[in-house]
Image 1 (tube, rainbow, N blue to C red):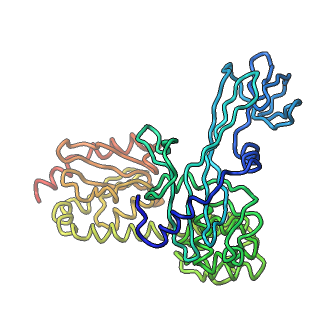
Image 2: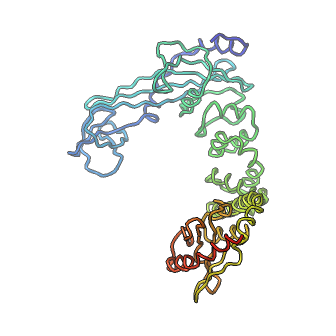
Image 3: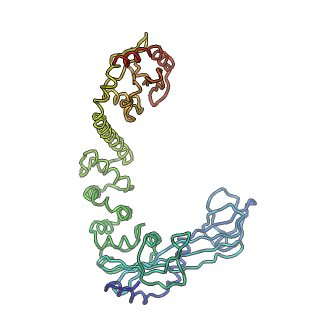
Length: 424
């Protein structure tokens, strides 16, 4: 890719000034980024993947410390003698007045009886200026089964950035880093939040809210808002109020969800009564239930508005059955005679008689069975073409102790429905 604008030409010139990565950075990555394993056979014999030495381990834990090299190892029960793992890591450097994130691929090969063999290769570089502009220099990608396949013989030069570079650059950063004075002024020093380094730097240069959180040392909130930028606009005022009252935001994601639910329920999201609960999870669940009820009411209202468009056809087809009541000593079964009755039946019995538009069926009649105290028992569908009950459902579509009795009672009075239809 040819450099066209001034910034790209500046990056292309600075790209040649970078030197090889230091050995200390690689050692740090080997310790903190790579997987460290111990091969364990059925005889309780372990082989350290780092140094290759053997030792006995009869414990049941998933981790063990090698008595020879002191490495903390993850125990894997396997007869394999060879394993390979890879991971990405980054370093942050400055070249003149440019910030660069260098991304490396670190690969380790484990063999029983041999020390771990490690090699690294630089993949790409993300360049940033003080205005927040970014440019990529990278090795050429190749076509293959994996997205992050690169031609290791190609030079690192200007290329178009795509989602692969964004994913592989979201890595752990070597803690001994250097940044531009503007970034250090805005709070980027010491331990970094667990988020994408370049996104963090761009946010620090452009968003005073991220700068405020960084300077306050709230790294968890910074990491969350870097990956959820739209949440900052909604929650920023609430966040300032909560922190001003020294409220501990241990789970920032759950807290932001609670603020969103409060807003949806029409509550004041600037009141400490709501945004600083003693039990955050309990309050989140409480407002979630309220929001769910509100959403259900809204959907039912929309469903009713849709049903009202078919109300004329409903009365035309079903009015001849209105008033039919079937009963015995304990049960009374009556025809549902309005759209509101269908909706109430579906809500109380927790089934789909209203949502699935049974009121629009021209071949069936829907009845509701009650006991003498007025409690709903089952909802009955009577087929006019078959002249019999085709289903009868209790709460949550279950059968009750009265099921067979209700079905028999309606079937014995089938002639009443057929006569009413014939006379309509």
